[in-house]
Length: 369
Image (cartoon, rainbow, N blue to C red; front, side, top):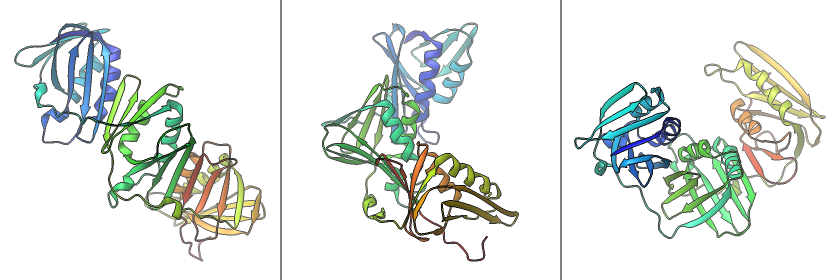
């Protein structure tokens, strides 16, 4: 194997593919990148048995072949070499010689045959989507994915495809995030994609309106994003009946400027630390939202105006969960619906149903101010 390629293109490809490489494994091959040179291109693959990322870059291939190289070492080398092009060759003993500018490295490779085969999908359902739409949908729901394995199915996001819509739903026991996009055509599908996979997909998705494709099989999904393919297992289990968890009625509705709400919560949150936890108290009354917090180092009060209808409400929230919902609203104004001091708060867009965030309240102590 002997090839020459552009150093910057290789750096970008290695940086992205490397994120799927296993950091803790007993298999040395899984700590590496599989490199395969053929037909005027170099293919790179990283895989940790659950998530795989592959891509290709153009290359001048003098001799075809393949090898596995330690991902961290190879990535560090290609990022630091001084030349604009990089040449590497692999001999019969898998010694890989890397040259760029005045720098030269020789590192030991592993036979490509030791690399596990990536899963294949047969009879997959194809879902074409706009890149910017998928990016927005993932970003607005990923924050609510559970980060512990007490219920593994909730460490992923539910994709629910119906005739005229695609809905993404994440839950973690304290909050719910739902994002809906109206699409044309499509079959009914329900599947759960791991949050880790969606985090990597989010980094690869461009802001443009380029088309991306999802291929969904029974156990795996493939995201095709430009020159990248991300393949991931799907999660098994019974996802929360989220429709039953969403309150259908509310006693209070508030229209709040998103920035004003965020700023007010952030100010009173200055007294909250990892060591000093305390709920944020919110009082919705007479067109005012009064926010306060008290910890052992002091008290804070803030307020802003917001038109409201219905009953006055006094309710407490975890400041981080409340801020996550507001920061991901992606609109200048939000509609907040409340059903009382112990009912979840709904955060919705001013018009339409593109997103819905649910934040569970925290029980307040009567002596907190």
